[in-house]
Amino acid sequence: SPPPPLLRRAVRRANSVSITVTAKGQKGVRRVVQAPGQEQFAPGSALGKMMNLRLNKIKWQVLSDATLRLEGELATQPILGLVKAEVLLRGVEALELENRGYKEYILVRSLGLKMWFTHATSRAGVFDPEMRCAVGKKLASPDGEFNIYRRVLAHAPLAKNGDWDGFADGLARDAKAAFAAVDDEARKTTKINYAGTVTSSHFLFIDSEITKCASRVRALKAGESLVTTVLVPWMDPGASPGRDAASDATGETSDEESRADESSDVESMFGKKKKKNKMPRQAPSTSLGVKSLAETAIATTESLEKTLTRLVKKQQEPAFPEVDLWNAETKQATGGDAVAAACGVLLAMPPNTTLVVPSDLFASALTFDCQSLGKGRRVLSLAAYAEKEEEKAEAETGTEKSVFLQFDPPSAADDAGLKRALAAAKKKGGGVALVVLALGAGGACDATEGPEGAKETRAAAEARGRSRSGL
Image 1 (cartoon, one colour):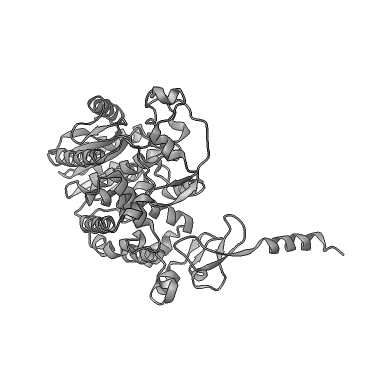
Image 2 (cartoon, rainbow, N blue to C red):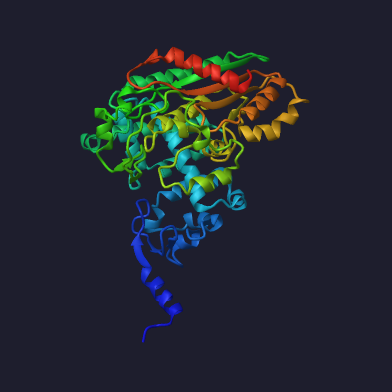
């Protein structure tokens, strides 16, 4: 006779359980897959004791202790390099107290590592677009000697001691070594994420923009204020978001875009793939301001944990919300390089400077939650600065500079908060700078002059920056 209803449900549930091998980075480690999003490492296994994926928990003390005792294949897991680096930088007690979920932790560190290694690739002088993608693929390989999780551990002691420039230089050496290891076969099999018009000149131009920006901020005197831009050309296939493109309006596709769309898989600089939904092409809006911020924005005052909880639900390659309006569906090369340029700008700032970034997420990813880039350079989100510094500004004075970083177009615009924070910084008497990462035109780019219309784009971005900030 058939089993009772409750037992039938139990039978069906039992039959749905299967044993699989995990994704790359955990090869050979078996786990129980119960349902999509409900996987769990086999109960009693080494990894099952450290991380409970079903409950979204990390047991940091167990994980930290285990990294010292694991042997064989488990000991070679790339993720353990990141774990050791995290414990070194922050300590088990702080990590346990924070109690961040496994998914949220992996998300914020993935964003940070992509930022740092994209910056390191430029810092290493790798400007050829094809080679940048080939280097990124090697850095993402879970079995390779250049794996980003393993390499971040090698340089974490420098960051721990406040030498974040040395940390960046170490990552750049890794990028150089990965560059030297790229052979002809690797070049042939690397997916190029940039448009066919992108050349080394685009990245040389961005590098020069960072240098000029740092020079302007260093020249800033006490009591002075400055709005300056770092222009980043549009480098993905197709038209830049919010810019006129007659060929797109007619539904025609460029050769570069056809090459980028011929596969249903999308590969980021760091090798992650996902299925791409085929959608009808739409004509872009005609100005940067047409697309409603409400469609993609998050408030800059949103808490870090709330932001992470929201982002882990997205079924797409993770990206900083700050550059949502820089990305066109799955095309994220320009947004990724803009975030890396921001990292380069902040590292180039003078000692004893307060660095104010758009969100808690950005600050967390950039500094591994250490809230500093060394040399007395504190890193705060705009919301944290408003909470901690505005009241002090009435009583404190000094010559410490304050640098506020924003993106144009922004995915979220807390203009009132930005104005208040900048006003408080000015009251303290030190120099105040607003650095705007501005989206430039696509197509050809001169290494010195930039993309077409660079002068006009820069002027418009700086005008918007002054309007938003009140400087």
